[in-house]
Image 1 (tube, rainbow, N blue to C red):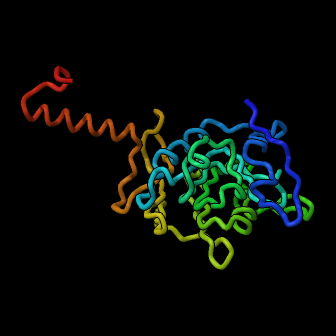
Image 2 (image 1 turned 180 degrees about the vertical axis):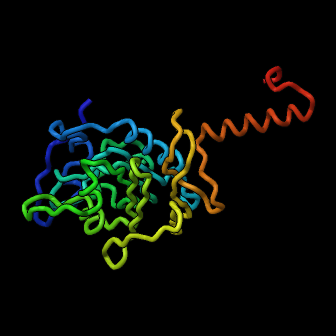
Length: 249
């Protein structure tokens, strides 16, 4: 099924950008010339972030997160995009306009920038992810510049699975400043959630993972973990009654 619509020319007085510029369905979701594909960690870590990103002050229907999804950031250059490893948005419909799974995230369509973005460092991307690269004036801005100066994303997080180093940058006076972390975790008061490093098993792999925690410092559970806890509590109650959980379940 094709979602492409005819390009609508601009008029005078100008039409709204939403009418004249391409929608998420018209813009490409992948660049066949882009080198490399996400490795296994780049699949599993964003999944855990998505499963545990549950801001208590927002309805689940008003929370969206994306991973390896094109993020179109500038209405003046509609073909330019960045592709964060993971980003979270609050106050936007989980489905585009309440009905469609997104093919990309288009700022001039959505009207809301991400609240937090996470980049997973690798040898090939570390310099750009940490803002250490310079761009030619004729080249698109770097990720750091887009997140800081164009989208003004309040929190920018990087995590290296090689060193287990967590770095958190927060927007202060228009520029990112790195926070000093006494321990590898940070509290985001605006959404009543914290983000930190957790030692545990995810997808059958034991290591340190980045995941969300609540105001009590407890790690947010995935649906599978919640179901396992319910089953364990039921088994404990059956044992207390002198019953064998395996027989009853």
